[in-house]
Structure formats: C-alpha cells, structure tokens
Amino acid sequence: MFLAILILLQTSMPCSVNFNRYKKNYEKYAAQPSTDAAKPEEVKTIASPRLISKLSPLSSMNLV
Image (cartoon, rainbow, N blue to C red):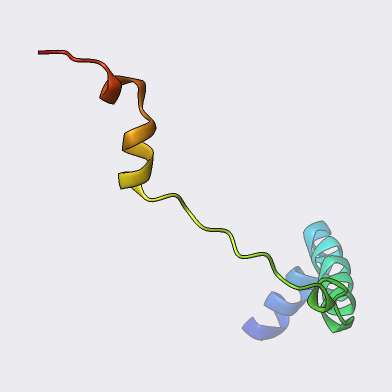
C-alpha cells in the first residue's frame, strides 16, 4: 500500500516528467559514438615554477 502511494506520487509529480525526458535524452546521447574520440588529444604541460620564477620582474630587481 505504501509503495503504491509512493509510485503514484512519483509519476504524478511534474518534475518526474522532466526527469524522465532528460534521462531518455541522456541515454540517447551517451549511446552515440563520440566524434571527439577520433581526434588526437593535445598534451598540455604546466610550466615549472623554477622556470617561471626566472621570468618574474621581481627576480630581476635588487631589493637589498
């Protein structure tokens, strides 16, 4: 009885319609093969702090 009431509330709530529609759209989108997989990925590297510290304007100033 309690489960029947919960199911009735779940299906009659307005947010459940949008949830089910978005879920179907997501499943359709997730099932499609992605076109980005064919492209080679770029490897991005972060500059080392040792290299960046030499480029700092404060490093070239004599503060002493």
